[in-house]
Length: 502
Image (cartoon, rainbow, N blue to C red; front, side, top):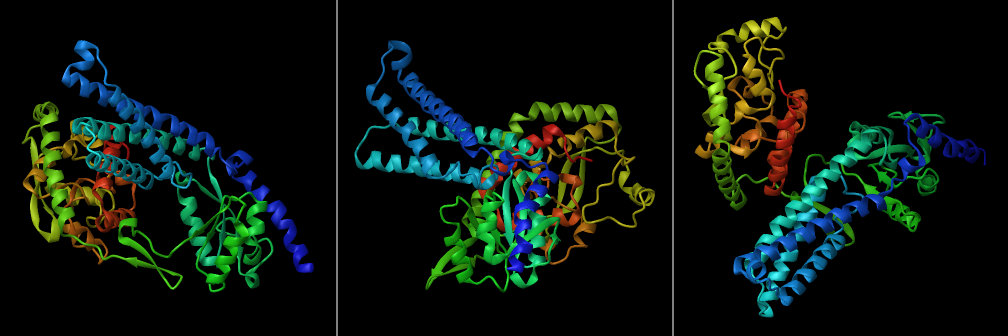
């Protein structure tokens, strides 16, 4: 009885105190997900209606019915209405507005993409089997336009949600269960970036490890694991996250799930497996036991052929579109400092193959010979893993502007066309940097380096070297073509803002 008395006040008092210390409120702990879902439904609906309407008009503009004679096809109006309704229903059934994936980026966008292509594949198959006359041009126009509009709306709401989370709102409260060290590690990861939308409200540890008033990672210990469901409900947690612990058996987790039923509280199990993405993970039940398989990373095959084809076609299109920009930048470099317009340097590519990279020159001629001087001035003895000195005196005035907006890297489109680089991949590095690689960093060389990449859109030069390596290795082992498209989209935002540049 005495033991229960010592824990009871902590459950009632500490969470509210913790909420005040982190500027949490009742609305913060329980964000208005329905309101956000309604906003998403509104923009999704608008995107679908616009896509179907434009496809309808394009279809009949081509035949001359809608524009010339003013005639309309009742059959296509019915098909358009049915397609719009089915599309919105598929987005709902596919749980694309699930609060657990909102704002997550790739996971949310991937759901939208998968739902859309499966819907249109099903429509095409049904139309063929029933011999329905649905124009391929109509479907071929509606699908990409609608997908682009829906994803554009999702990106806008994602930025909106991130801005709210940075102010402390739209956060999901979580109760963490596990041993101290593992709980502390999970808390650190969840609190590392406010944009992920999680705030740990408390920790439950094995009963024998409870210490009154203890904090783990700045979060109060609220009691034992046997009372986790009760505590989670009292503090208003939206989820219970279970980390590894000897005291947490499969039966314990099973009973915890039963205890949480009907309370609107999610049960999340964390694995000690980082930087392994969904496409490489396969879950298979074995006699009721969920077994997770992790596919080995592959660096050859059909998807790499598709990536190379995508790179070449996109690089050719971008080069043609940016020819005026390339010409203007070349003239500026030529007019503002003596020397060649392009700078060529040897870099290390896929499987250690050397190639010459092309860039607009941003430094004075002979800058390479002054490297030791610059290193000495900044207190460095050698080139680091991601060497890029701040306030480099060798950079020309126009060069600083080009670097800020990554315009100096546009000539690397030629490297992509030549097959030395990819549009998306790890940053191409010089021999002195590669010489410092450990086993993990060497994984970067399993694919072609990229004109942009996960490192470049996640902070660029502001990231620590170990974080840059981790991001690059994670990309190398888990990349998808859809993920490349998202990185290219993020690159546009990063380049136009100039964030993280040196």
